[in-house]
Length: 175
Image 1 (cartoon, rainbow, N blue to C red):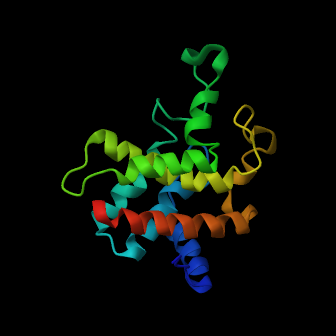
Image 2: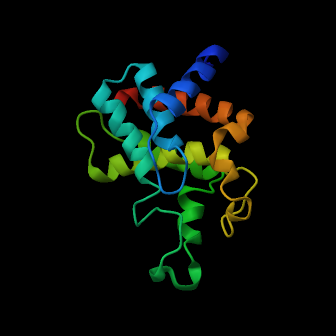
């Protein structure tokens, strides 16, 4: 049975996530990965420190050298496309694979690799919706980050919030 968040909670929560939990980020006006994940984790009932950890694990995917989407000198002609395919411009099969890795974590103690897997999964859930319709090679550079501003694509945002809610609910076993 799929649980759905009531519509009023989605819009109230979005306000809280984007206005009350503002975090400045080099790529976005407000960091949606961190704010939405923090809000949802607290809504579900995670302790504040655990909710913060989930939000930080999700957010760091954009900044960690092994997963960040921007090209680096070390990439050569590949220009970071592999990382964008694996973590940012994902398809449903990749989201499912990241989910399998994340939920394989044990509840007693998660390793650094397992924490990374959880963050990658939560991040991919968001990017699956926000990057829908864009390819990993050019990304959404030609539309200047339009998809990364959730108010520009409210239907994708709503689907993302519902799926991330489910992802975090499943993750309660590893709290």
